[in-house]
Length: 119
Ligand code: 5GP
Ligand code: ZN
Image (cartoon, rainbow, N blue to C red; front, side, top):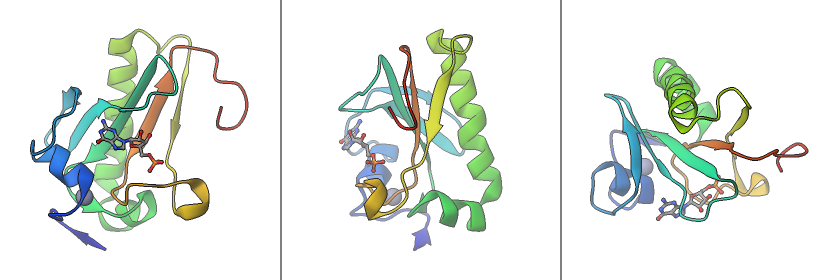
C-alpha cells in the first residue's frame, strides 16, 4: 500500500525526524542514512520520502522517485570515495529476500570487495 506517510512505519518516522538516524544526504524526494547494522564500510539506505511498501510498488506509482533513489546513490558513492572501485545497489523485496522494513529502501554497499551475488 502507499500514501504520503504511515505513522507506524519505521522509515516514514526516520524521514519525519521522529527517530534519529545518521543522515548523509537529502533531496526533495529522498533521504539517505547509514544502516544501523552495516554489512560493509559504506552501507547506506536511500529511501523515498513517500511511503511505498517495496521497490516495485514505487516503480508503478512514482517511477521518477525510483530513479531519484539511484541518482542519489550515485552521488553518495562519489562522496564516500567508492565510486571508482564500485559498489552494490539492491532492493530486498518481500519475505524470502529478507525485507524487514516495508518501506522501499535502496541498499548502497561498498568500500570492500563484495564477493558473490549478495555478499
Ligand atoms: P531489509 O532487510 O528490509 O532490506 O533492510 C532493512 C535494513 O534496515 C537492515 O539492513 C537494518 O539493519 C536496517 N535498519 C533497521 N532498523 C533500523 C533503524 O532503526 N535505523 C537504521 N539506520 N537502520 C535500520
Ligand atoms: Zn513508510
